Length: 223
Image (tube, rainbow, N blue to C red; front, side):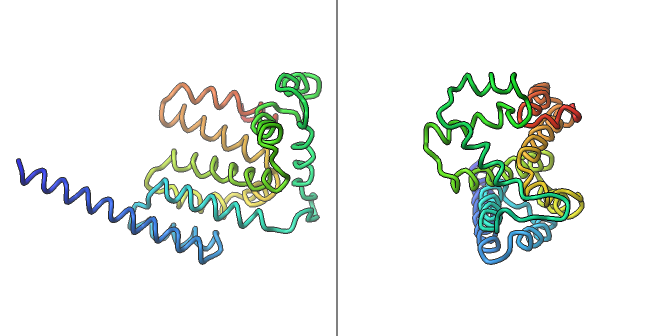
């Protein structure tokens, strides 16, 4: 019996040590390299080793958020303009209004007033007095957290390869995380709901599916 406990302890110590080393590796890679290149390296490593999910989620979300946060804003592309200045205006439209008004405004004019998008930023602005810069960084962090978490939820083992594939195989993925914020968040919530309901067989996923249009109405088409 003592030998069994010793083997279990040895295995647990090896598992913890392995996770610490891999977490340190992730931190170094995302600190040194462009986050997309760091993601590519992580995807290659994940083929052989199972990378720690929590460490990856925290480190990669901070890295990607900083990368996009520090970009030049109000850029004009051939097809559309940068939406971020518009989101900043939407953020400050919540200043001084009551919690109930968020929902009343949506009933009066649904477009751009989806309550589940405005609610967390209403808290940030009216309770914590968050600045424009704080809003932008937190929004980027939320985008990457929800996207990465949903793909981790889909596959505990190969989530990094899924994330890598999302960025480089989905035609509008980079454009979406770059400046089409509400659609990206709503789509990630919808994706999380569909994975929960159809893959994990958890009926609670239906709540996320049907709530996603309250983040952006475009999800009505998905529903």
